Length: 142
Image (tube, rainbow, N blue to C red):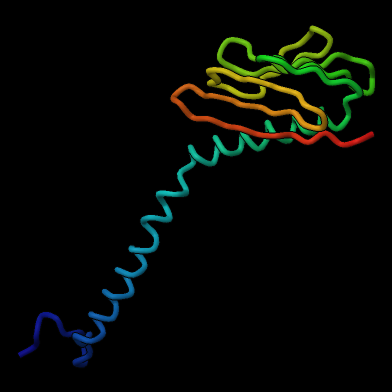
């Protein structure tokens, strides 16, 4: 009489093979579940916007011939003698060139504060929902 669990020719899985398979499966799940939690797309998008903001501001500072910062406005004079203004506008941070245009750099901003001391610009951003982002930008000597 054949058993229900046996495959043709009397071959099947032993208890040791099943236990080993379950051990490998459980170990993989224990590692993957927390990893998937930390790789949520929302976190990557938010982090990416912060990195992009840092890159764009640093690029503007690298080419600036004059810098003024105070409150929620950062004003620069670039190499083409244009006034670049980075400021809070409604719930976003935008960039304007000589008072024209409206290039959005960050969304969902509650407040932003720029301060300038010799050789560096400090930025403090508070996002809606309570998130906070602080960054010090170093200005290259010319």
